[in-house]
Image 1 (cartoon, rainbow, N blue to C red):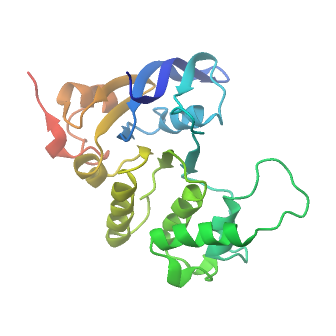
Image 2 (image 1 turned 45 degrees about the vertical axis):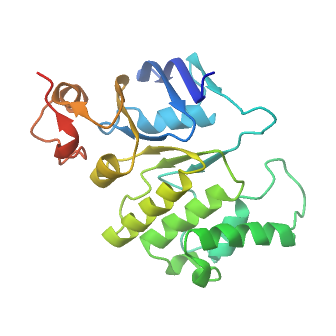
Length: 250
C-alpha cells in the first residue's frame, strides 16, 4: 500500500503567456521532509501554492491522500505575508488568527479552547514569554516562529514553508530548523529554501526545480543536476546548494 501523502501529476502553470511550471510529476511520502530548491523564478513558490490550492493549474492534478477516517489539514508559512508589522497586535492574537473559521461568522469570538490551543503552539516554538508582546517588537527569528505557531494551530498533517529562515540570524535559523526537525516526527514538511544548512543537515528529500522538475530524490545531487538548475558549477555555494551534498557521478 502506498504511503504517498501528496501526488503531483503532470502539473503545468502559466502566468499570462509565461509558463511557470511545465509537466511536473512527483510524490511526497508521509513524514517526508522535502526541500524544494532552484534558482529565483524557477517555480518553487508556484509549486507549493498550487498544492495548497491557492493557484489553479492549467494542466494536471494534485492529490492529497487523506488517511482513512482522518481529515487532512494543511499549514502554510508564506515568505511574504499581508501583515503590517506596525499594526498593534500581539503574538497570541496572531496565532489565534489561525483558528478563525474560513467561512464568515459575524462577531466571532475565541473561546477558552482556542486560547489553550494557541498557547500550546506558542510554547512549542519557544515564545511563551513573548505571547503578549506586540509584533513590532519581535526579531526576525521570533516573527518566523510566531508564523509557524499560527500554521500549527489547526494541527495540520502537512506543513508548507516558503523560505522560513530568510533574513534571520544564525541562532534563530538553527532554532527554527530544530523545531521543524521535531515536528517532522509526526508531520510531513515541504519547504522552499536556499539555506545550505537545511539542504545538507535536515531535509530527507530534494525536489530541484527550474520550471521543470530537474531532480527528485535523496539529498545527494550530481553536478549535472546542479548545472541544469543554475547553468554553471562555479556559483553553487552562492545560490544555496552546499558543496558537500554535490557528487560528480561521471
